[in-house]
Image 1 (cartoon, chains in turn cyan, yellow):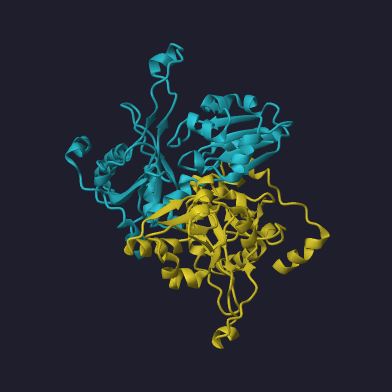
Image 2: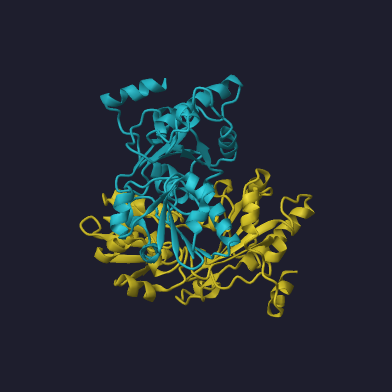
Length: 286
Length: 286
């Protein structure tokens, strides 16, 4: 049996009781380590679960899935995913491969950022299509995701923006030279996402469109589900400088008109007064 | 401290390890018992948690929240919700009341139907606004939810339909006479939802519109996250008669064009061949 087990969003203890029981009895346990992260690392999970974990990077999962599925028809193999196993579409592929090999599978669900964002008080059923915002480079600055933000806003729906994660990436030079040297991991902050968004807003304005502006109400979220979770509701401009601490971050662009209950809930999460130390971030933004 | 703790979607063991630890040390533990249900009842939860649970119906939560919050400033009180605490908007209200009373709160997230529906293989980020389908009566047959289905379809987005639950409802007669006699609980099936939808489709057609038809691809889901979960992908017409077993049910109306990976995943869940016993359900539909 292949078990796909969600780990939830905080730390080692956010696994379900059922999930933990399965982890402890499987013959091999993989940890998917490229679509999301917890606030604790592999070692803390291993200690709490009492099991060794095998890190599975993108290459392993997408190109060497046979390693993961080996003998899963006669023994139990667990594949652990931060959040819920279906937050990232890539895991459907693993299920399809297992099914083709005649290996049964079982899913143990857990909290996903897709639903846990409800903690800010915006109503979940009023979210439209989710978008991903990737790190721009000097030469690659995609804006196509913004069409979906626009469509959601036109329909009065909130947009959850999932922010880019770069784990185990090679520099272009190392890639070309075939050197397996990896860059340090990078996690996009709400500040970076808001700064990129403001550039898109300016490009839209130059074309005579303004579905989103500097003053559009947004919500920045960090480490949702963890003990030190932070939420701040403010304008897109404010999101450029708000200090939410370490990863993971997510950003919501609200859909325009809010239900009174949504407004009241958001008022619990004001953007903190800026301290002198955060002014440099503000300057970056303008 | 007020703890809002998600119980996930299956049975007693779908609580997180963190959630269980909190339940075991709180001075009072409430179980919200009107927006969703697990596959096991209160007694099974009490046995596994080792705690007595106080059932909180809608009246208790919405009108007598002060009972729940009593002394939560000096002791720990847990409020358990099937799924994730923010699946139902009603719980924002409890948080706002607690905050006004100066009571701190903490949320322990868990799987929600809003994200666990990803198990059918449809990509979560392609879901538009969620709708609720309520039981029609002879005199009350609301169709306004269908505007949102239409808008989602126009934008190529899937619609998750949450199906009605009637728990602790009084008949009109008992309500008028002030008798606290309650009807047996009712949970809308995929069959009932599809039959109501087909009536809306026919009304739309009479107005010259046809955003959804008998042949629109839908997905019926039952007891998502439980051991005996069932999923079936087929036409809206087929959803009228597919046998998915006991509650809870949900229905997805797909957004039209599918990603090849979505199509391949849905092919894992064909509508089972009808047995003679289920033909009566089919007749109901036509």
